[in-house]
Length: 114
Length: 113
Image (cartoon, rainbow over all chains, first blue to last red; front, side, top):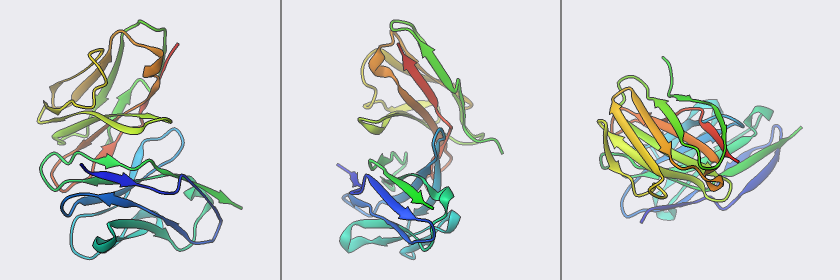
């Protein structure tokens, strides 16, 4: 069965500092990988996705993620966080087969200190 | 383009009442997903449809929950009778092809008293 682990439940970072959110997955083949962000009271918004090709993926809002097959990881990074990046971040994995049923990690809540 | 539209945004009702949540997917999308989000269990997939046909309902918690998709532009999730433990945020998402990500609505916050 596929699974996603986000080891950090909460992360606090100072505005302007760099941010890295960890995501490890378990899946039998090369999956589709996603990062979503959820602001309070809102739905999930896609930050970026990995399907194939270049393992370093650029997304919206200055985020990037790197797929490392050997480590079964898909960590999310941002060089300099803004106060508006305070939110909850979800990593998700899905099969390449039709239907794309996603499995989500438990989420990481990011707090940004001024 | 309009995104996934869910209604109502908030619902407060008493235990035992029937609750109906509604979702309008993005036009042209042929897959629709219902999720439930709680603090204890995180984000759980309840059921999803491809071309209006239910494909996997293994996440539906029990017979009190039912979902329909009568056409490509509308889906409902019904709880009858509702219980306090059903209180959660329910999300609907849609997508249009194998390599497109799911797009989420803003959710319905359901409180069962």
